[in-house]
Amino acid sequence: MPMDDFHKVLSDAFRQGRMSFAIETGKEKAFYSYNALIKKYTRPVVDKWINERQIIPLQVGNSTRFDKREVEVLAMSDIYRAHLCKIEY
Image (cartoon, rainbow, N blue to C red; front, side, top):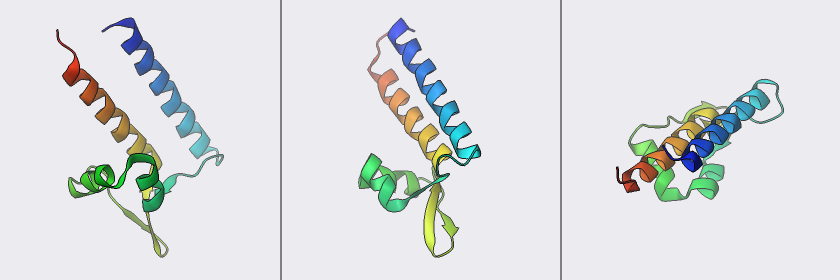
């Protein structure tokens, strides 16, 4: 693995840990709304994740929410998968 890729993996892992800590301490919300997901990742991507059951909608009161940690891990894995498909060994 090239050093730039290794650095990216480490920084993403650090970001994930920081986000988890912020959620657990109440400094950051634990859920995304559907609209927030669409703004961040686009409707086709979000709908694909939902249809493939990669993320599961949660009913919170009268609204539908998505676990932020679950979504971020999925987004990172999609990015790495796309990147690895481009690498020639």
